[in-house]
Amino acid sequence: MTLIKITGRRITDYCTSLWTFLIGIVLVTSCNNSKEEKSASVSSTNSATAEIALPTSFAATIVADSLGAIRHLAVNKNGNIYVKLGALKDGKGIYYLTDTDHNGTFDKRTGFGNYPGTGIRIKGNALYASSNSGVYKYQLNEAGEITDTGRVEIIVQGLVDRGRDNAKALALDENDNLFVAVGSYDETCMDASGHGIANCPLLDSVGGIWQFHTNKQNQRYSDAVHYARGLKNVVGLDWNEATHSLFATQHGRGSLNAKFPKLFTAEQDKALPAETMYELHKGDDAGWPYVYYDPFQHKKIVAPEYGGDGKRSVEDKYIDPVSAFPAHLAPNDLLFYTGTKFPARYKNGAFIVFHGQSQPLKKGYLVAFVPFKDGKPSGEWEVFADNFTGVDLSSPKSAFQHRPMGIAQGPDGALYVADDLKGTIFKITYQGNKK
Image (cartoon, rainbow, N blue to C red; front, side, top):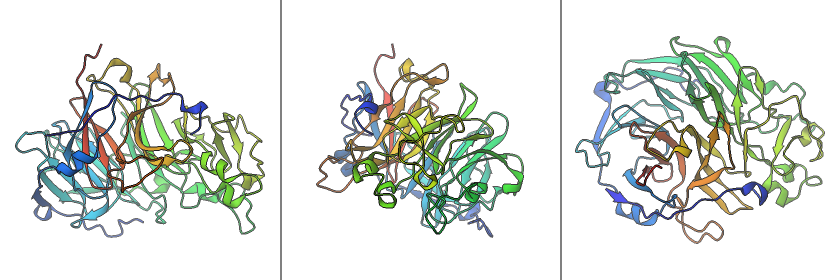
């Protein structure tokens, strides 16, 4: 097992300083066609160059690598990992990783599912995985394994996929409901004259969250509850077991300066709008494309396409975010920690994986943490795991080593973080006194 160098680090209060159905005819691989392989030992080069910075008494190990373009991941009750790939690897879009010799690294890989995508979740005795236009369901045995990868149910099909912002993040509640995020391929919903379209028609099929049932096959938009709208692109989605509610992290819009140079400077474009996290309930509207959230004015501002001047706000029509983060950080996964192995302050708090960079802060490609108390954020966001890139982002002089993308919790309370650049998985554990 290869240990990563650990350095204590915590950064708080950045707010004040700056911030189709690919399914068609689905050729899902059967058990006989699943690809099994023994992986090479974990690369010492990766461990040497990825000196992840973590808070004191936390440690990280590399438990798998060279997996390809990992998106999200899920850990079963035995601690084995299912990973979803954004691009096929040897014709497979999902890999099941097991540690056959119990040495702490995943040496066996079994591939199945011939569709790329992002979302993957385990709930009860089922694994749910998304393509870019639908959702599949596989039955698990008591050990949390799929005994026949050829037996798969198509739960959802026909979701919009135009190639841009087409990830379908997943979440599940306690009542057999499946939530699917559908991002918008269009950033602003403008007409030919450059003005925003009233009652934006995009919102009928993108830019929101749709609720389906886990036990019904071949569902489409017409079978779903349009759970929440006004969310340009959600890739981080999780059900909070403490609040019994859905949370989502949104990628904010861009191009303010390019489209409206008289209203926004190039520097403002780098700092606006905020990336945001919402608590969502049925019928909620977060406001896209009509408004964006300004982290400096702490207000929802009317979008310039709809007559906004960068100052005019809308207070009541749309929901407020529960947390705001620096622009362009790209929140790509969200996890509420339910384990007991970390110090108590982390219990029920939110871990967010950022896959982009804030230019003003020269920070990015990190895992952040938002503490929660009584179901609400109880403090400013902070950096939890940093330096995945292995370079100084203020003056990069070499290639990035890793880019964090997905996060999952193991049955032992450890966190697993996926990297989509080299296909590496990091395991983060706590080694100190929890008190």
